[in-house]
Structures are given as structure tokens and as C-alpha cells.
Length: 382
Ligand code: SAM
Ligand code: SF4
Image (cartoon, rainbow, N blue to C red; front, side, top):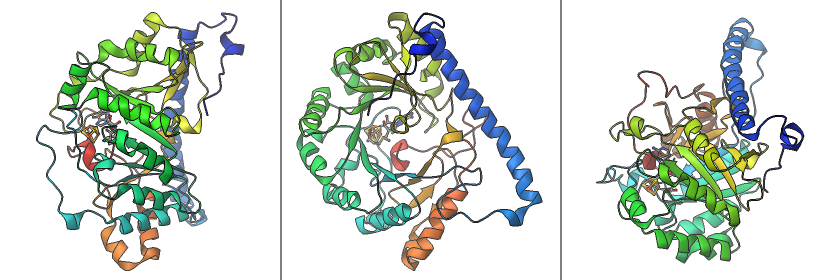
């Protein structure tokens, strides 16, 4: 499952220093992104000239030629924590019971998405494990014929109790959010989280047979950026995949721009102590650029939606707990699936197709005035 190493031939004899190679890897990815934006212009021109020649795709494909095979399904917008980068301290306005899709409806969405080529579903939230009945629902999802992988993102607070049941339900892997290795900082970031409970949950997951969870760390200047090296040190002897994530704007009032630590700075800090060996990109890495400290048991990853957008290879469609299908976190466009759910599966498939087709080319978060309505990540599923 671990990504293969690619470096030996390029850097082994010191022809390209590893640190430089890490930076080059980022540049290459950026160049690919630029090419995607250019290609988009030319493919639009072609579509205008030869509109009739485009065959209607059978699966989920967008206007820009990307295949959508990954569904992020949010089962609730509620959470037992209040992470400062995700939610306001008072939480988000509670959706009424009628506004939330039932498990039957969420399952229908998942079945139709899989019939359209979705291979991987990530269940998220809010905190997915706070929704009553979620474990049997996950087992139901896992049994969908054609689904290759069911994975879950959690804050880990309920894992000590639920890890064995989740494993039995057929969840293949877990991502756990854990932004600090210090109990007081962790409690402050999450506004009340208990670090030892999350570690207990991670151990319970491994004991239950899960592969070592991916650990998501949102890096914030002056909050936890002084722990980047501690997190990296954790991978020396433990097989965790630590993924540093750039803090993205959501609520627009959390001072994200001064707090957000960008990938080049994260890499600079890592390289101040460790030599990083880039890993070949694999499907399971998703948008993360992955590295390993030579000889380490675990891996490091950087997810850089701001400084190294991965829009050109974005294969995701999101469905919120209230049934909005969205092609991008940072686009206000979405399709309300509720009326289509009421009509039948054929209509539901068409709605999913339309949502995929209308996926925007990219998020444009670095524009001077990004065009999206402030939201809490928990309302869409990060
Ligand atoms: N409650 C679960 C959890 O915390 O893992 C799942 C939902 S949470 C919204 C999903 C992911 O979004 C988490 O890894 C979280 O760190 C990330 N996230 C939330 N707000 C973010 C922000 N402003 N910038 C970057 N990542 C964010
Ligand atoms: Fe809850 Fe996850 Fe958002 Fe934290 S990041 S407030 S745990 S939904």
C-alpha cells in the first residue's frame, strides 16, 4: 500500500539533492496544473466548433474531461468538537430533521453514484460517528456491488468504542484529524477535544485491524506550526501517514490568511531537520504530495490546495447531509438532490451527472476576491 520510492536513480548518487528534488516535484505538478487550464481553453473552442461530435459520456465526467470516481458523502453537519478552523465556537445552525437525508436516501445516492462509475466513497461530516445508526449504514454502503473502497474521516473521539464495529462493517481505512501532539494545544484548537481519547481511538483502530490511520494536521501559524518536526519525528518509528494540510478559507472570519502556512514553508521546516525522499504518486495518496524520511516507518504528505492546487486532477463529487451535490467546496453552485430522490433513480442519476458536468474548472481561492459564500467545513464535509 505504501507508495513506491522513485528517487534512487535520480538522486541516489547526489546528482540532484533530495531537497531540490522535493521542490522540483512541486514545480512539475504546478506545470501540469497550468497545462490543464490552457487545455481547457482549447477544448472549449473545439466544443464550440464541433458541438455534435461529442459523445455523451456514460459515467460521471465533467466539462473539462475529468472523470469523477470519488464521492465524499457527508452524513451529518453536527460535531462533538468545534475546531477553530472549521466551525464557529457556537456551532452551525442545526438543520431540521426533515432537511437531513435519511440513510435510505444517502444509500440510494451512493448506489446510483457507483452505477455511474464512482469507485471510492468517503463518509465524512461534521463528525460522521455522532450520527445514530451510522455503523449499520456503513456496512450497507460497503456492500454496494462495484464499490472498490469505503473510507471514513473522523476526529477520533468516538473511535475507542466504535473502531472494532467499523472494521467489521467493512470500512477499509480511516483518516483521523489530529492537529497537535500537546494536550492543551489540542484542547484549544478543537475547543474541548481530549488528545488521549483520540490516541486511544487510533490504537483501538490498529488493534481492530485497520491499517495505521492517515493523520490530518491543519497547519496554523503560531498555533501548531512549531510541532511540524514533532509530527515528522513520529513517523520515524510509527507507520503513520502524517498529512499537513494548508488552512483554507471557509468562514472568512477566522483570520485564516494570517494563520495559513503554505506548503513551501512546511517543506522548509521539514527539511531543516530531515532529508525528504519524494514518493511516487499513487491513487491512494489523493491530492497529497508524499515524502518519506529515509528509513522511517511512516510517511509525510503535504496537501496544498492554495499553493499547489490539484484542481486539474480533482476527481471528487460531494454530497452534503442535506442532499446538495457539489462539484467543488468553493463554488456556490450545487444541485439539490431531494426533488430528484422523490422522482426516481433515473432522475437521480441525471442529477448526479449534471452536478459532475458542472464541476468548476478550479477553486480560484487565490483570486483577490474569491467568489464563494462563507461556510463551515462541517456543513459540506471537508
Ligand atoms: N469531523 C471529521 C474530522 O474532523 O476529521 C470529518 C469532517 S472534517 C470537516 C474533514 C477534514 O476537513 C478534517 O481533516 C479537517 O481537518 C479538514 N478541515 C476543516 N476545515 C478546514 C480548513 N479550514 N482548512 C483545511 N482543512 C480543513
Ligand atoms: Fe468537527 Fe471535524 Fe470540523 Fe473539527 S474539523 S469541528 S472535528 S467537523
